[in-house]
Image 1 (spheres, one colour):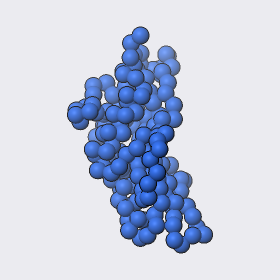
Image 2 (image 1 turned 120 degrees about the vertical axis):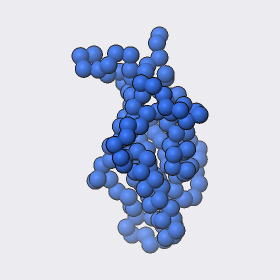
Image 3 (image 1 turned 180 degrees about the vertical axis):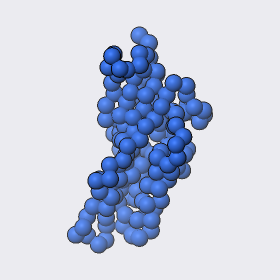
Image 4 (image 1 turned 30 degrees about the vertical axis):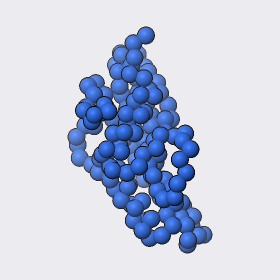
Amino acid sequence: MKTYEVLNLFAQQLERAVQEKVVVTPSSVDEKGVIIKVSLLKTWLPSKPRGTYGTRSARIRVSVSGTAESLTGLELACDAIEKLDSYLVEGSQEIRLEDAEGKAIANTRIVTAISEEDSFIDSPDSTAVQDVQDDRICIISFPKEEA
């Protein structure tokens, strides 16, 4: 598999799982409200002494971002965050990358980390519009494409 394919499959998987709009960045999408953005941060091969041969990893940022212009907007942002947490973090089930039909792909794994230090609402001087930014980092391990 290639990293770009993994990124797009992961975005589709999230959209199916949380029933929210998911956008792969960079994108020209600019709409009101809150959306989930998926951004590739890094892709790499594991180090040979400890890593598994034949695999590649990608670090992906999953962000609930946009603007909350009312209490309804704040509620929608909270709902999106809770849906992501329910899918990516809760429980002890191992999450695998899924194909376009929603079937788990063998030899893949998704691990999620959340920083408790990041900000959620960020515009303390404004009472009309609040910026929403809540991030998760997902590491996806997958079989690398053979040359």
